[in-house]
Amino acid sequence: MIPEKEFCNWLCGIIDGDGFFEYRANEKRRAFTNGKEYFFREVTCSVGISLRSDDLRTLRFIRYKTNVGNICNKYSYNTRSKPGFTWKVSKIEDLLNTMIPIFDSGFLVTRKREEYVLWKKGVFLKHFVSNIPRNTRNEKMWNNDYFEEAVKISKEISRIKEYRLWI
Image (cartoon, rainbow, N blue to C red):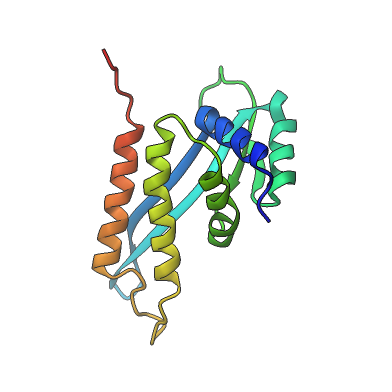
């Protein structure tokens, strides 16, 4: 169930300011004891918000209204950072059935709008690939064409996230 329009707009505003769209396509190398190399392709996508610990109630409210995601401690390598929490949604079903409809009915206004358009395309790609029937257990789920598209989406989102000074 999608929350009311006012909540969707409010959540889009929070995402615009403190949220993130994450989309990664990685190829990892793993070696077995028999000496054979095995390449594992992994595509991950998620959306979330990181806030200071004194705003934990806000994350709990979002979790309550959307009924998706998890809240966990935000680890920081910077010792001067304030303690915080992150609400993150990464289940593909939750992204498709709850988060995408929220963002489609809400109003993203910053560069996050550009990120969202690509991220949404990537979520649909991951969903499509994960539903392709496989004949054998070892068959590659992410063939070259699909994986190249996922890598392209990941790189384009990273490019959008780069800081640009507009003068």
